[in-house]
Length: 140
Image (cartoon, rainbow, N blue to C red):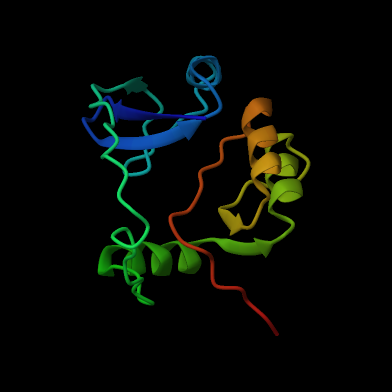
């Protein structure tokens, strides 16, 4: 997996993960990448700063308290995604593939997928993105 900084023709900058550089190029050439802000499909790689790992700390120094609350920005993102898409739970992989193949109508969805299933979708060219939080499971 590789993460690229991307920019649309409107100047919006965002990041996304891809199985490989070739997978990115395939999605780009077919116009399957869109800007999450404006929906523009003219997407190009943006200049990206490399990530430099920090020296490893002993386990006793590396412990951090985890906040049970998501940062405010992620809370807003979660609320927007959950309000504007259908939660399909563990059916995410099959639903996303069926929409990509035109077997069911396109609609915004979110749910859960095993890492290997998400990678398979990406390899097939199905545009999916991981969420930076665990979706709220909807129950009856």
